[in-house]
Length: 266
Image (cartoon, rainbow, N blue to C red; front, side, top):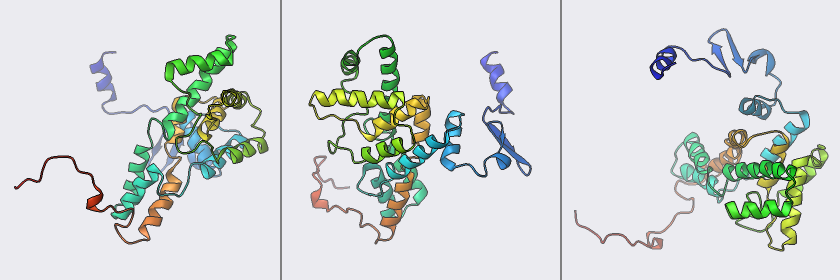
């Protein structure tokens, strides 16, 4: 079919693989009647179903809920993406606009969702190379040569990660700790620690390993990360909104080191 034929065919109809609705009658989501199926579903479980087309096991869903609640929702307006929401609040923009802007800046190379996607990609490739009889040392050396460092290990602000202890505890409680990719992530961690470079696994790396054990692709993880910080963002918006307008870290003009054009007369 030519491009013109494809355009003409799509002009008045949309063929969907995820569902649709007949206003006043019904709604279908990935082949399921929404009103008959999802009334008792966990919202995050349905979000996962939307992103992957698969259902989570009971314990995996509990872990997803746990990590989203305790690791991705810090109510601290000083955190880089929460600060965008706080700035929106302090100038009295809307919460929706502030959260959307903050979610957009969460797509950073070294913060937020993308590094965790790259960590997942590393674990998938590392497992494949191990299956081809490469040693862990060879895999780590190859990764460093290609990408300079290993995503999922190290932390820019402090060397330790306070989220690891509760994450490991929850994984053990839910019988998810001994799965292959989680153990691979911990093996890499032990190898890096023996090098004495102070680069240990971070929460994103451990979460990526869990996602690898779930059979997720980096793209599917990307979809799941699109809303993971929003709970903390709402809290930060409300916190700043309860104070007077303009009081979120104001800066005096004299604090600005200007090096542009001289003052001009208009």
